[in-house]
Image 1 (tube, rainbow, N blue to C red):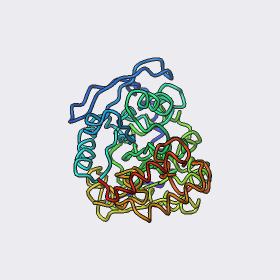
Image 2 (cartoon, one colour):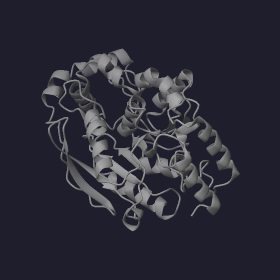
Image 3 (cartoon, one colour):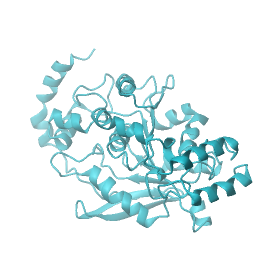
Length: 371
């Protein structure tokens, strides 16, 4: 049994001086390259920090076969201590699903969030990871690759620390992402030093280093950066925009209790979201994906339809889609609160549902069955 939260905090803080003085150089903006099928290693100049930053990006085979086609983008945020190891298995996972027609071709970007960068701007300003990703990397991706630039062409997703990051960036920058996917997200507790029981992936000493380097040992700054607080601040906008939110946590995961509390928090805020808790799954990315089964791919299809005009993601363009299109056409402006969720009828992603979208929809309607 662990000590009570307040006692644990006192015990940890007694280690703070020696732990933080031993902290390694933190800013590791350039990583080695990972070799994986269809994955590129790239660097870009970040105006925020005035130097180069590395990232990896997966492009689907259709990117080569269809040189004028544009693709939606999924931003995948890695977990703590694992900037590179997840790139090959996660990119292979999506590549296989695209090859099997389970999801539409998409670009997957793997930003460099530092081993323990927490996907936020550090209080000291030394590691402004949030600013580098949102203000520098996203525009770089849209300028470099044939993306569907705009909110409805982006998902943000991550595992563990990346799930925490996907939540906080997605909630804060709700104008940039159509969907948020938090997989085994953490830390979701309201005090970083009150670690979940069984959280042995980060030592108490490392937790103190993170607390100092990222949050300046300031509990108020930690709370202000948390998905919990950002969801509270932006609940009305998330609801109005129809942001699709998914929270997935295995029942055997040490973060389950904190994830359940966060789910209940979203319920109290009235923020619509999916909460999925696969039985017996621990803190493991691919195990969580496998436990979701085919439902996992339905999540992506509901955002990035496998063919234009398939607004309800049932692999056909029929009367059901026409009803959805007609409702959206009557509203016109994608930013109007009355617009059906995700503004999926905006097929050319120009922010309105108009005659250009109708022409694209009519063409898809004539084909009926998605390719």
